[in-house]
Image (cartoon, rainbow, N blue to C red; front, side):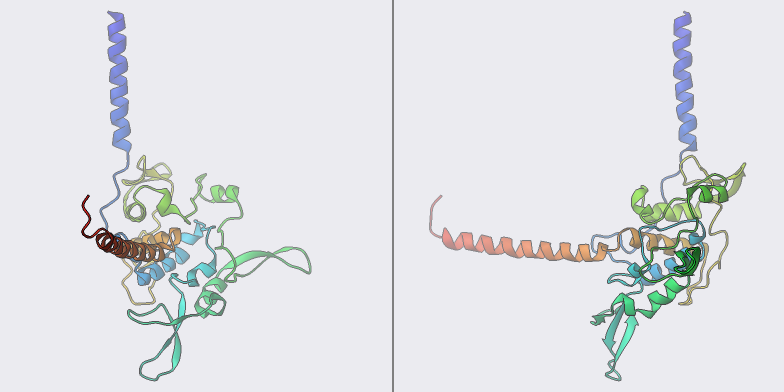
Length: 283
C-alpha cells in the first residue's frame, strides 16, 4: 500500500513539475515576414541600413559583434557598398551606395568608401601609443573589428548585474526562429519585473536580465525619414542581424538558381542526345 502511494506521489510530482516547466516556457516566435525568407528572397538593404543604425545607437552599448569588421559593411552585398554608376541625365560617373534596380556599376573598393570610413571613425577602439607604450583610444578604421563595449567578460557581467550580454554576430543562426526570434524578444516585454529580471513572453523561462532596449518609439532618428516605432526598429535590427550572420545569402541564392538552370538545360540536352543516338533501336 505504501509503495503504491509513493509511486502515485512521484508520478504526480513529475506531472506537476512538467506542467510548471511548460507554463514557464517562452512562446514560439511571432509569425513575422521578412523579405529574405523565400527561396528567391533578398535583403531589404534600406532596412539593413536602418537596422545598423539601431544597433549602433542602442544595442552596441551592451552587445558586441566580434566576428564583423567595419569594412564588411562596404563589401559587395553589404548595406553600405558603394558603386560607380553613370548618370543617365548628365552622362557623368557618380558614386552611389547600392545599385538601383536594373542599374549596373563598378564596385568601389571599401578603402575608398567614405561612408564606411565615416561609420568606423564614429567609434573609439583601444590601441597602444607607440611613444609611451600606454593603452589609448583612437577612431576606428575600416579594417578594425566592431568595437567591444566592455574590456572583458568580468566587466560585462559587472555592468549587467552578473548577466553576460551575448555577442550578436551570428545570433539569428544560433537561435531557433532566427530573425523572428530577435523581433519577438525585442517586442515581447510585458512591463512586469521579477526582482531584477524582466518578464518576456518569448524568452525561454520568461525571465530575461536585459532591460527593454526598445522601450519607446523614436529612440533613433532614421536618416531616410522612416518613422522609428518600436516594431519598425525591432524589424529593422532583426533584418540587419540576419545580414550580419549570413552576408553572402543573396550570392548563394543567385548561384543556386544558375546551377538549377544549368542542370535543367543539361538534362534536356542529354535527353535529346539519347533520343538521337537510340532512334530506331528497339529495347
